[in-house]
Image (cartoon, rainbow, N blue to C red):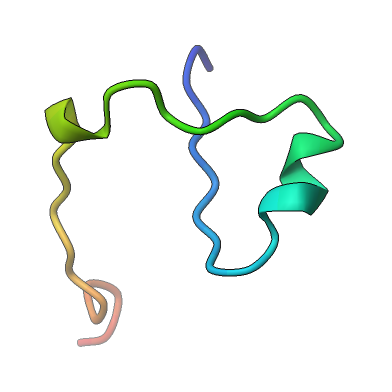
Length: 40
């Protein structure tokens, strides 16, 4: 996988210890949010 973006509200320093950095251009990212996609 070329791009693995973890999502966090409060663990930025933890992810930074493993080499993660803030996204350089967050304005180019988009998402589809379907929180109940697996509930039917």
